[in-house]
Image 1 (cartoon, rainbow, N blue to C red):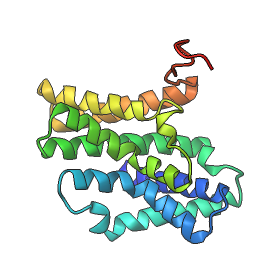
Image 2 (tube, helix red, strand yellow):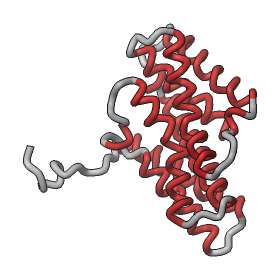
Image 3 (cartoon, rainbow, N blue to C red):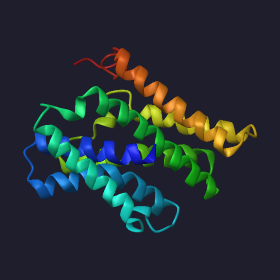
Image 4 (tube, helix red, strand yellow):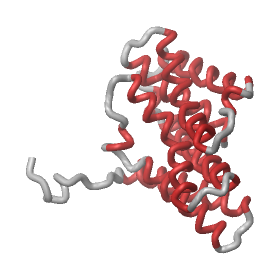
Length: 202
């Protein structure tokens, strides 16, 4: 799952940079940022050297995602929105949310910390990529995306709190995250804005 997540996130980030007509260096930077920024932030929050700086395999997977984005962009008009990329992205979201929850639990943080780190690990890279693309992070105003990681991290914490094995809690986190994300894409779920709730007039 982690391997798919790294490749998928690097692919999606790079594809967005290609669409914005970035050069090859910019495409690589945005792709790797989306793949690794969340995990690096997670590691810094628990006071450890980021895994991305320790493992050449991780960087290689990110570069593979960048290469796939470049190759697919020559074939598909929007590879980041292709069904395969969307499913892979959902799996990556789940993998990173689960990894973040496990790392946070090992660091003995609070329940809020577990959910927060799981969410940051899952969506932090996408937020950084959007900033590099000079636009507001889509997780703050569009789509039911970060909420999936919040639900997954919460499910992990609940599982551990009721005495479930760590592996069981991890599976529950992954299933909840993937399930809600796929459902959100399928049914077009979005969180309501103040305007849609009728509390603020346009």
